[in-house]
Image 1 (cartoon, protein in one colour):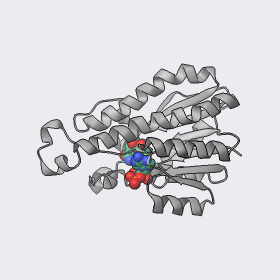
Image 2 (tube, helix red, strand yellow):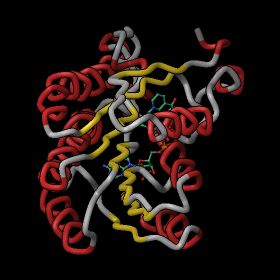
Image 3 (cartoon, helix red, strand yellow):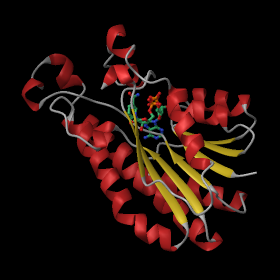
Image 4 (cartoon, helix red, strand yellow):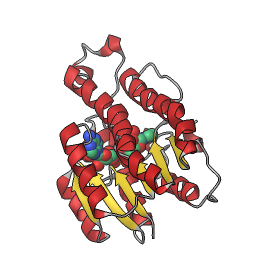
Length: 238
Ligand SMILES: NC(=O)c1ccc[n+]([C@@H]2O[C@H](COP(=O)([O-])OP(=O)(O)OC[C@H]3O[C@@H](n4cnc5c(N)ncnc54)[C@H](OP(=O)(O)O)[C@@H]3O)[C@@H](O)[C@H]2O)c1
């Protein structure tokens, strides 16, 4: 049985990942206490309410996890937040609201810092045990830049640059890492960010389980084989 940490496990891709991997030893992390506890109860697994942008809390949780398990086989980074809006639109009330300085910091702190911090926290244990696998749910926005979401682009390019820079170092310690870069996914991601998209646009998205099938493929690869980066899109959203 693998020990697998999933961040962002209370909703969307993280929640669907917990469903697929329910027979493994799961450790779920999210900042939404009510939803996280409901998922952890359903799959009878451990969970930690933690905002991954909170350094003190993240260190406490990672120390606690290290004390409670003998190994960490896999880390799946799903926690993420969205915002959009061209700089030139930010006087418009809607875009002003979702692009305050605090909100911009939250996007970078979650998508970039939080992902890097989670990788940093599991690295010593994976190095010591001599193996490990890390899967980051990045985005198409980590590959291309789009005029309408520069802050989200910056956050996803930041974590992707980190991943690419550490791949060789991780490989020396037999730790695989993959950035999964999906296009639009039909989750509450946009509603959670106070930016509901039209049904017409959402209908062109992937199902969360399409992304989870990619995660499953990566977990089932032979021991010595890794896929550093993989993209997935709905054909209607090309
Ligand atoms: N949906 C898309 O179209 C899409 C496309 C490409 C890539 N992605 C990426 O896919 C990943 C999963 O997104 P999703 O679509 O499943 O969205 P989701 O349904 O909103 O799930 C994200 C989960 O992460 C949690 N979270 C956010 N910030 C956190 C923090 N600082 N600490 C701990 N947990 C935090 C959220 O909690 P709250 O609900 O409390 O915020 C939520 O439970 C994200 O990294 C996203 O960038 C999404």
